[in-house]
Image (cartoon, rainbow, N blue to C red):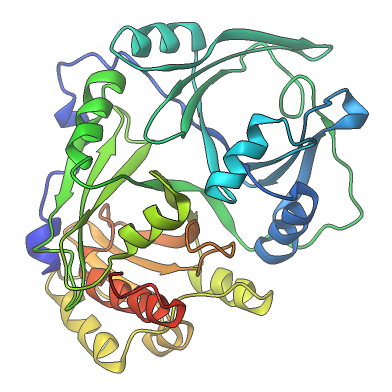
Length: 389
């Protein structure tokens, strides 16, 4: 199945050849989660995932409505924000959705131009271009809505020398757990409602100039009980990738349907973070209490050598060690990848993380879909959410 699905042209420079990338993106600036208790969530991400303290904004800095803790690990920045009163819009968001991703901030050279280009193409405004200043310089921010209540924030920081953003102070902490080797955000996946995937694919094409460079339908992504459809969107330089999922009809309730039920609408399903040594990273995460989906069956790992040979690749890692940790393997023409998925990181079965190590592969683990979704279905069965009500 891998070869058939993954045999696509991943050369985004060829897709964009001759076309102007009207929205040049330099990378992911930060991801902001709205959470019920930012102080405790920050301790979790530090102790469990190895993030470090970076910056803080709260009552002590003059913020009367919200408090935010900023965490960092290599190129990944997480912002955890909680309301300080019942009147805050952040509070409304948490009551409806629970803990989840609100803002996907994109690093740009010109935030005003990014806002102008996207809004004139139909984007709904979240924040008009705003200049924030302090003694370290200025940052220009502007935001637009994407699916659900999720926001893309354009961040221009070329004239800022501070730690994070104006209004934040350095966050010093005596608790400095060792990082676990997380490097950068590889991709972020959004779940949208029934028959909405193509609408949002077109939105990313028209509004942000992205391309759909990889697609999967319910004939490729299915188990005995459920199915989904997915399309992967990428910007011009390939630094930003947003797969978009929608449910498909099945005998039982799919993971996408479960997400939409508990998140109460579209939103970010998972954040995929890269590592250079997935065996060490996952071993460290497990030792710190991070829970992963159940290990695929023996027959899955017996098939791995053959799947790699199909593309003339040789596995460098010890297969038995990968099996003991539940790490999955997939391959395409360019190489192979190693990946594993956490269980949801909050009580609602919504947001989770993917740990991924790319050994040349440009795909998204199509050959792992069946094993992955069967594992997710086992979790759904335990939660009592697999059967349609």
